[in-house]
Length: 205
Ligand code: SF4
Ligand code: SF4
Image 1 (cartoon, protein in one colour):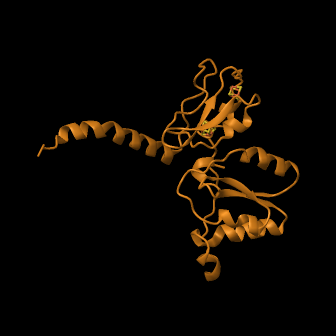
Image 2 (spheres, rainbow, N blue to C red):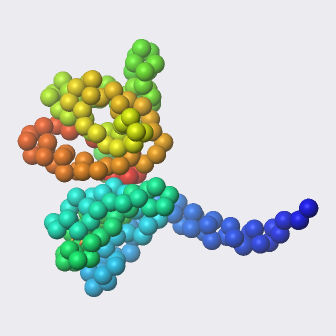
Image 3 (cartoon, rainbow, N blue to C red):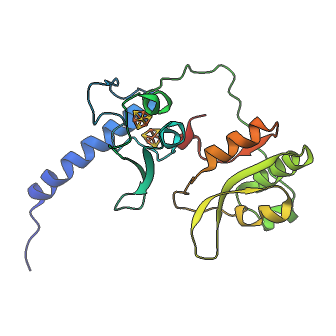
């Protein structure tokens, strides 16, 4: 049997370890990415490893030059149509990786669970359902990840408990945000409350 060359294994693993460590440090200390320079044509977006696929850049682009595609591992990434881009830099101003947010004193943590009956048909303690009920009681809209019959996970909208059903599970894949930001903006402009459920790390809102 061929023996394993551990020195070679170590050599191959080293860059991955270093990049993981770098990623963790940036996440813990919340450091912004390199500053944006409009003169650098290909520097509109954060580095691939830091992009969360939130789609904010796509939503803000006034010329619809950005569209979200899937990388070979299935994650959402922005693609830009160079023929439309005028290098206004708006996409950069909303990218959570570049925009350093002030840390808020107003952060609270709660431990909550719903009734036994609700938890039997929910995940994560049934808290999402309780928040959704409250939103509906105030004539609001809920936007959250759900799965359709083709096993496609994306952010969908619900105006009542029946429409909420596909959103009540947990999906261990990155949800497609599609045009959620556009729709949310329309609802907010129409004076509706919107409950958006998404991981903090992806949206940092
Ligand atoms: S620089 Fe402006 S036009 Fe170009 S992709 Fe970004 S937002 Fe769109
Ligand atoms: S705005 Fe979101 S999708 Fe666009 S580059 Fe930044 S993290 Fe990626």
